[in-house]
Each structure stands twice: as structure tokens, then as C-alpha cells.
Amino acid sequence: MDKFVINGGRPLQGDIYISGAKNSVVALLPATLLLDVPVIIENVPDIKDVEICMTILRHLGADIQPVGPGAYRIDCAAVKDHAVPERQARAMRASYYFLGALLGRCRRGIAAMPGGCHIGERPIDQHLLAFEALGAKVHLPMRYNEKGEQEVDAVELTCNDLVGDKEIVFNVVSVGATMNGILAAVKAKGTTVLVNCAREPHIVDLANFLMFMGAHIKGAGTSKIIIEGVERLDGGIIPGSDEIRTYPVVPDQIEAGTYMVAAAATRGDLRIHGVIPQHLKVISDKLTEIGVTVEEVEDKDDVYIHVYTEPGKRFRATNIRTEPYPGFPTDMQPQLAALLVLSNGQSNINEQIWEDRFRYAAELAKMGANINTTRDGAIVFGVDKLHGANVNACDLRAGAAMIIAGLTAEGRTEIAEIGYIERGYEHIVDKLRAVGADISRQTFPDET
Ligand code: UD1
Image (cartoon, protein in one colour):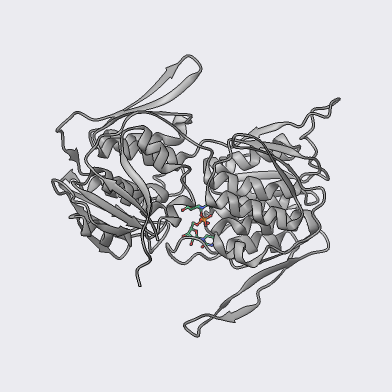
């Protein structure tokens, strides 16, 4: 069993560089299925979810060649298959983006129900609403799970033609459904209007990528997105040459936010490079509110975020309520909680997106945190310090919270189930070590 082992108490100091966004690249890679020419995608993070996406693409028939650090030439010309392999579909949530992309490309797609972190019920009714509105027939074969309950086993989509020319109104603001709506509509006939869309930076990135390749999309980043269907997406070749164009993945808002909180929690002094500060505003504002200094610095052709805290100063308690972008991201809630457990007073955390996102609270309690969960949130009573303990990464962002807690704690923390963390954070051990953390990845004999 592999674990992260942390000897806490060292402030993070120096410069750290942010990778391409996990939540964007897991949509951009399926989106290459819609392209009629090859493309190069760069700033691709070296994370497990990318490996899974590439395995699926290759299985479907894509040719993927590395062409530099974090850069891949992807050519989907030979793709004939429309079935996502089951193991990979169940291994991550974002495998559902293959459904929208395959529908757009092949007019059919099959995938096992997507897996991913256990943070609550994760329905896909809004995705199906968009597919059906565009003309797809949806078939949901059922199976019995290990508890003997019936559940959806897979999603099968077929259609003769995808036809836009309509307004599709989502009942819930959903990142995944908005992305899938875009993927399915870019090559549909006519104009599709998506209403009540999510506005996250990775939605804008997907739209930018598709527009770079020739799609007609307006309004990404607002709640109404207008997509005029096109027959071909062939903008990947520079006209008059054979040169293939390169698209960089947007910087990871959540990775940057995680290091901002880690810098603050360890009372460090960190310059966080390769970011889009506007995407981090709500996180910067929250940190400022609790007494952390956050500065946006423009230095020649570099823009970075500088985070530092006065030594010995206690953090002020605060309240957080998670909301779709531009509100406070649910994917930063566990990490901020790992800092608030060290604040002066009581903080209330209200989770609006995922109902089961507090399993980390019991893990933080093992380290001395005073945190009580409620029906839709948690109440944190600040303590002076945490102590090291053996804890679990219950999911990806909970795992990041455990790392932050371990970095601040006195003594040694061992974090198990690190597979969750490695799904979404590129080279996290190397990055943290480079800024002064005492963290290592170690192999232990399996517990029986
Ligand atoms: C994405 C992110 C995830 C993040 C979440 C919210 C990726 C790969 N994952 O997940 O890290 O936590 O956004 O920012 O980008 N819902 C429905 N029906 C649907 C779809 C969603 O009711 O068909 C509900 C969900 O139960 C949840 C809310 O809508 O309460 C938001 O979910 P959604 O934005 O779809 O999350 P994901 O796209 O799965």
C-alpha cells in the first residue's frame, strides 16, 4: 500500500508552478473525437485521469503521440468504435464526456455509468435531457448492485441526426451537463441555445478549444450559451501549411487554490505562478478575510499570486457557502476547512453542491480538529494546533485537505488511499518538496 508521509510544521516557501486544469483536460481530450484534423494539446497534466482518458481514446482508435513535455498530438481520423471500455468508464466521473463527444461524432455512444469520487448522489439526468433534446434516444440497461438494489448499469445513446434549433433549459446548474450539451451540439444541425448553464473556467476553456477548431459558440462563461452547428471542425491545421496548431489547457483553478491555502495554513510565503488571478478571486477574498495576505503581482510577462501570513497571527474564523462559479467552489471546501480548524473561533461551512462531502471531518478529528458535521455542512471550532495521525484520503479534495492538515500538524502524518489525490494533482509530492515540505511517497506492506 502506498501512502504519503508528512513531517509537519514547515512553512511552504518559494515558487510553485500550476499545471493544466484537470477538470478542463478531461473534457478537451474527449472533444478531440469531434475534430476532422489532428491537433496538439499542451499543458496537459501528468495525472491519472488523463491517463484514463488517453486509454479510452486509444481504445476507440485515436492516435496519440507525445510531442514535448505535457504536449500531445492527437489524431482521431481512424476512430470507428463508439463504446467506451467499461473499466475506464467506471474509473472516473468525467468518462461521461465521451458520451457527448461520441454522439457528436458517431451519432451513437455507449459507456458504463461513470465512477469517480464518492461525494454524494451524482445523477446525470441533465446530461440526458440535453442529449434527448438534440434527438438522441437514451437506453439505460439496469443491473443489481452488491446491496441487491437495482441501479443503472450503462448509458446507450443512438440517433439518426442531431438537430439543434431549440432552447434547452437545464433544471440544475451542472458543469458536466453544460459541457456535454456543448459537445453534443457543436455538430448538430441548426442553432442550439443552452439555458441555465454552469460558468466555470473549464467550460470557457472547452468552448475556446472548440472555437479554435472552428466551432461557432457564443456566451460560454455566462448562463446562456448559443451554439450554431457546423459540419466540420478542421481549424487545427494552419492554412496553407501542414503545421498543426497547438492549444494550451487553462491553468488549474483548484490546484492553485489548494497551494494558496497550503501556503497560508503553514504560515508560509509562496509565489504561485501560471495562474489566471480572476479565477482565484473568491479564494483570494476568503483568505484575505481571515487575515492572510494575498497579492496579485505583475512582473514582466509573468503574473503570479503571492500568499503570506504574519508569523504568530491566528486566522479569523469565517463562514463558507459553496456555490457554482463564480461562488466559492465546492472543490475548495475541504482544503479551506483544513485551515479553518486552526482559526480563532467558530466557522460554519455550508455545502450546497454535494451532500456527502464531509467524510474528511472524521479524519481531521483524528489529528485533533474540533469539527462537527450537520445535515448540509460542518461547524468548526478552531484549535491551537493539530497533531500528526494516520488518516485516509476519502476523495480527491478531501485528500488535498489531509495533506494541508499534515503540513501544519506537529509530528508525522500518514495518508492512505492516495490514489484519489494522484487522480487530480500533478506531481504533488515533488512540487511540495520543492517549496520546503517534508513529504514523501512510501510503500508499506498491505494491511490484512
Ligand atoms: C464537476 C467537477 C467536480 C465539481 C463539480 C461542481 C469535473 C470533472 N468535475 O462535477 O470536481 O465538484 O463540477 O463544481 O469537472 N446534478 C444533477 N443532475 C445532473 C448533473 C448534476 O442533479 O444531471 C447535480 C449534482 O447532483 C450536484 C450539482 O448538480 O448537486 C452539480 O453537479 P455538476 O456540476 O454536474 O458536477 P460534475 O460535473 O459531476
